Image (cartoon, rainbow, N blue to C red; front, side, top):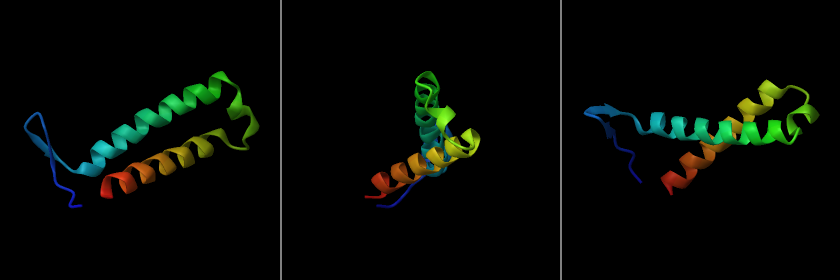
Length: 67
């Protein structure tokens, strides 16, 4: 699939920026769920763990979109 620019209120933006925003929203939902159930207390470095989850979510979105 060819990635093309996205028209966002008359401004053309790169498709990766839209994917990054979507991945951030998904990561924030997962972070709140992890905080609510106390899962973030079991990891060594919570900020690094959340960043890693963000990278995994973003990579998954890119792979699904490219397919």
